[in-house]
Image (tube, rainbow, N blue to C red; front, side, top):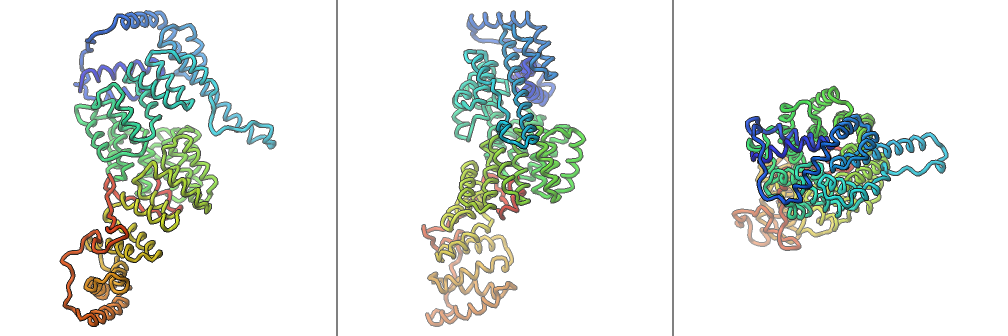
Length: 609
C-alpha cells in the first residue's frame, strides 16, 4: 500500500465530513479501515515538487479565512447534521473562504430539495382530496427544484475543486451532461479523493465506450486504485461487467490494497450477480455478513439471488433480521418485498416495494420489482407506470425497458413491445433472455434473426434455442436449416450422454430429412432411426416404420447395409449446410453461465431479478 493513499484517504475523511458530504466521508473511512493497522501507521508525507507562488499564496489566504470563520463553520456543520439546512445556509452568508461558500451553496441546494419534495407531496395530497382536478395544478412525475439555475450562476466562475463539484452537480440536474462531465474532470484534477465527484461522473456515462473515453483524459495513472474502483462502479451501474472486472475486484481485495473492504466485496458480489454467477455471488455476500453483519448496502441484490434460487428459508430469515436492524431502509423493504413475492403474495410484495419508493424516490430496484409484481397480477397499466418511473431514475437500466416490453406484450401491442425490447438489447447485447423475448414479439424471419443473435450469448450445451430455431425453419419450409439445428441438438445430447428419449424428435427429424427431403445420407438416417427404435421413446414405433422405408430405399439403390457412416459427425452439424453454408454454433457468454429461458410474462419476476 502506497503511503500517499493512506494519507489521502485520511485527509478525505475529514475534508468531506467538514463540508457535509457524509456519504463520501463514509466511503473513504470504510476504505481506510479496510487497510491493515500496520500499513495505516505511517508518518504524514512532506509534499515535494515545485509549487507556484500563486498557489502558495492562495492556500495561505484560504487558511487565514478558515481560521477566522472556524466557529461559524462548526456551527453550520452542526445545524446541517440536524438537517436544519436553511439556518445553516443563513449562518454562512458572510463567509469568504471557499469551504464556507461551498457549505452555504450546498446547504441551499439541500434546503430547496427538501422544500421541493414537501411541495410535491402537498400537491399529491391536494389531488387526492380535491374532486375537481382542474382546480389543482398538474403534479410532475418528480419534485422540481426551481432554485438550481440560480445556484449554478453563483458557482459558474469558481475554480476551487469543491465548488467545481457543485457546478457539475447543478449542471447534471439541468441535463447539461457534457458540461457536467467537464466540471467533474476539473474537480477530480484539483481534488481526486472526493468520491461524490466520481459517482456524479459515473451517472453521466452511458456505456463502456464512454467510460474508456473519460479514462483517457483523466490525469490519474490507469492502474491507480481510484481509477480501478471507479471502473468497477461504472460497469456495475451499467450492468455490463465482464470476467476481467471480477479479476480486478479480486486484485483490489488483495492484502496490499483493501482486503477487508465490505464495500469492495459488495462490488464484487454485484459483478458476479450481473454475470449470473449466483452461487459465487451468494458466497461473497455470506462473507460480507461475517465481516460486517450490520451492513445493509446491496442486500437487495442478495434478496434477488435468493429469489431466483427459490431459497425461501434463508430469504425469510434475513428479511426478519434486517427488519430488526433498520426497517426504514429501502433495501430492507425491497428484501421483504421479494420475500412475499416468493411466497406468492404479490399484493403484500407491492406494499413493501411501494414503501421503498416512498423512502427514496430514486431507488431504482423497487420501481422495477414493483412492475414485475403488477405483471404477475396482470395489471399492465400499473406495471407500465412503475417501469416508466424506473426509466426516469435511470435510463440505462435494461430491466425496466425489458419490463415495458413484457407489459405491452400482455396488452397485445406488439409494435410497442418490440420497440422496448430493442432498447433493452441495445443496453445488454449479449443477454439471451432479451433476444428470446424479442424473437417472440417479431414475425418468423425477425424471430429467426433474434434467436440466432441469442445463440451467440447462450451456453454451448443449451439446446432450447436450437429447438426453437429448428421449429421456425420448419414452418417456413427451410428443411435443410431446420435439420442443421436438429443435428446440433443430437451432437450436444450425445456428447452429454443424455438418454435417447430426450432428443428422439431431433433424431427422427434428421433421419426423415435424409430420407425424404434431399439429405441423401441414408446410413445416417438408418443409424438414427435404429437408435430411436431400440429406445423407450414415444417415437419408437414411428422409427420402426421409418426403418422399413430406409431399408427399401437402400435395396432400391443397391447399397443395402454395406454403406457406413462417416467416422465422426462434426459437432456443429457441418455435414448439413444452411442458407449460409455453415451451421451457427453457440458461444458461451462472458460468465459461462446459462440464463433461464424466457417463458412469457408470467415468468418475468424470476428471470429479471
